[in-house]
Length: 495
Figure (tube, one colour):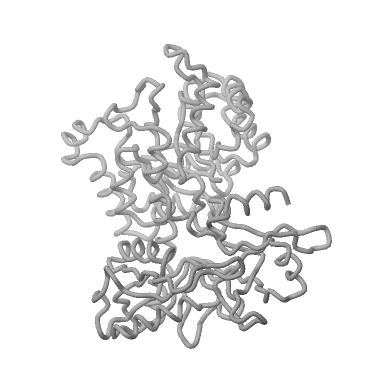
């Protein structure tokens, strides 16, 4: 789970009072500290002996970073001088803010001065500025002004900053128009039990809404430290409710650049429990691939299952993995000097992945549908053929087509999909999948490149294998893992 709260230390006259507030805030509820990513200092840098706070945080809370909210605005030499006083306290993951009116040389020198791994956050339109005031002074509303400042800097130099400071109101627009790896630091967080405070009324929103809109970190001051006594909301109650609001967003489970951990967080992963000797205790799961067994065509089974349906239920989780696939497919195009014309989803999980990835890539993202020819049994999954129905005719003769699946292993469904595409005149140039579980086909299958978001090679067994046969005989086999998901997760928890 991502740590998403930034706790600001503002309005304190002594380092001790600030440190006392940190301890008080992080003590109750007892899981509060699990949500704190950074401690932010702004006016705290004007206190005497302010470095005591930095030493205190580093010593007592090594898992929490520092947000150095300097808003560096000066010439490159002055900025470097300011930073020089604090370099010894800076660690990987810390953040330093720089204003958009700083020169290119200032940005360059700041980057050179900062230790590796310390991030630069761009400050453009301050979050206490109402939209109409921004329009009157800048000639544009805040989201356009912030984007304008950000894009101009990025056009003039390479990687001038790593994050952007904005209010919740600008998130939807900025996340759509800035690079996928950009982080967003968001003040102006006020849930319904809080008063507006110093922020612009037309630019505030709550924790859940800001996370859903794409916030990386939320700056929460009064909502964590003061609550709202006028509404009988104590600081502790406000912190508890803020945590509840964070957990209400699936976005808190999305870990940048770590899709496998994200799948774990979304509870989309199952592994059969084992005893102390490493023997499976069940249930096992049936895979789509088949072999010729004593009873005829039989499904392979295994101890690992990825329930990638878990990524489809919320737009943010689906977009997270679609962005991963877009990145991988663009790399494939560049490496092979090829242009993809169409993405074809294999039901059911591949359909949504194809549609969302296609939207991001500005390509046709279409779907195939199943036509069941034999229902599932206690030992076999259902049998089906694939057809184009609603999207019949979208694949044109000569199109370079990518087959999209959520999970690849035996490629039995993939084989059916390729036949349907080729019958329509398309050429399958790659097979893409969010996760590739196959041990034999990590990079290609029957000469067709495999483009995977993550590689998760795992074993599979024939049902007569001595390692699994007795469990299957006792009925410890799921032929419908998604339908049995609650039972499987309960077994894993007990194991």
